[in-house]
Length: 188
Image (cartoon, rainbow, N blue to C red):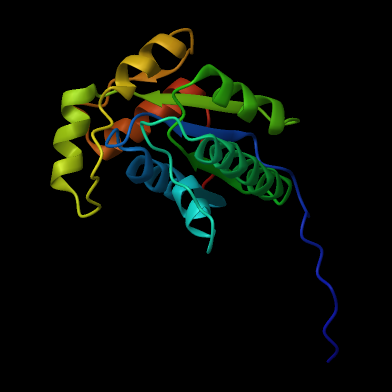
């Protein structure tokens, strides 16, 4: 039996893409994984994992002004959009999780991931709850990112989907995301 190339983009494209954003500790990665698990064909694109692909020269975001780190924020976003577009074309709903608190960063996502509805969902449990979650998890953060909560609430105030997940369970947050976006998980 000969092996031949198999078409990748067969069947209908996914109904859209989801961008879950919020400050560190807002629950993005946990909720993104749980949301993706509700669909029969989905992908979780964790933007921090894309940063970790950089073997040499990588610069993580920091509170101090760092042009190279800022450039890499947009590089990560571009790569997330490329992956998301590929998954959409193949019929997989992409769920992107990234810390997007600036209007220019969100506008970049919208300008780069075109041809598909992008559902931006802001997880906003508040700075105190996010800090509490950061202190309770295995992934220890050495930087206090709570000031980003004010930036997020100022720059993205006009976004339509905000979910205060401070008192919600992961499943409750996923239910709220589904309700707000109108996305319906496909059953197997």
